[in-house]
Length: 116
Image (cartoon, rainbow, N blue to C red; front, side, top):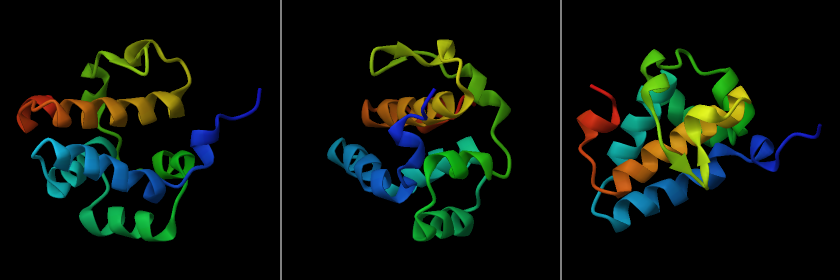
């Protein structure tokens, strides 16, 4: 089965859309970065390096220093699909990130988004 196109897209090509979506709703780039760092375990410098290298999504999640174990608590629908029901691990990680950004844009408190 061929890989989905999103796997080969660079995170850097989608990242500005995450930031724009958040900022349109009065949230910040700093909050977007915090969500990505929480999910993946990257430091801010490591995240910026991945963006600069234009790392693709598959590699971005494969190389993530420490995927947050609390990400399993992320539930809900993104693009008409329940994130908790996605069987392909890389796609699930991508959709977890999408869901967290959606929650940020909907005004949810950062502590709740980060499952604290």
